[in-house]
Structure formats: structure tokens, C-alpha cells
Length: 188
Image 1 (tube, rainbow, N blue to C red):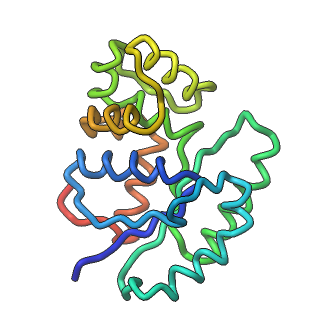
Image 2 (image 1 turned 120 degrees about the vertical axis):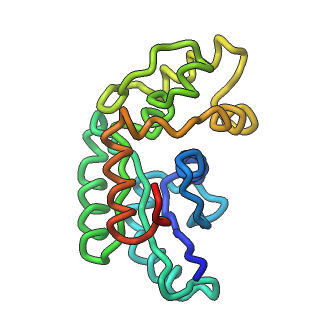
């Protein structure tokens, strides 16, 4: 059976990053971003998560055996986001969804990747828990005359080599959670 991994995310671009990471790790699975064409942010994600879960279960493309995961940044340095993150966590636990949370931002997964580090000319290291990771990435990209949006972001994530999972506990744990929930193909 061909399984689909539905990812409810605060930003559709984050789904593209996760898709490329999984692909580079040799984990090929069909991924559907939800909601499409929106960048809801963490507030709308928290408020709409239960409704979106319901919508997915009633989508004509939903099949028994598909998985649903929620992808978001922890944003621990933003006090207003803590209750939203807790609300998302509670809903995921209650509804049996896998929660994928980047510490502190998903860009920490990018900067921990050997391919990205080499491309940007920086030391490969753990970026989990560091603040202003997105701003650091944007500054490094400016040095290469690139911006962190649209085509340049796509060109950047093509540089991923799938090694961030070795340095990023906030990536390793979600991968393990997806595997434990039988949402990913076996073999890696």
C-alpha cells in the first residue's frame, strides 16, 4: 500500500525542508502539506489544528493507513508562543498525531546539515536551542548573494545531504517518532 504522510505545518516551506531531509536520508514517502497555499503561523495552527485534522480525515485523498504529523518551531524565546506550543502538544497527544518540533527554528535543521554547512562555508555543528538561527542563515546567504525565500531557498535545500539527524536532537526525535508510528518506510 502506498502511504501518505500528511504534514500540518505553520509554514508550507517547512514541509519542503522536511521532505528534502527525508529524501536525502533515503526515506521516500509521499508527503502532502496541509493547509496548501497558506502560511498560517503558529497562532492559526494552534487554533485550527483540530478542524484541519477533521478536514484531512474527510479529504477524498485520505486513505486508511495514512499518517498525520504536525510540524512547527518551538520558538521558545517568544513567550507568547509557549501556550500555543502547549496547545498543539496537547491536541497531538489527544488525537494521536506525531508532533515534529524544531528547536528553536527549523533553520537549525538546515544549518546542522553537512551539505548546507559546506555550501555556506561554516563548521558543521549542532544548532538546536540557539536563538536567531534564521537570521544567521539569512546573513550567511546574503554573503552568497542569495535570499531565504522562493528559488534561492529551493536551491539551498537541494544542498542538503541528510546528515543533520546526526547533530540535531530536535530532528532525530521526530524521525524516531515517525518511525515508531509506522509513518516512514522501513530500512533506514
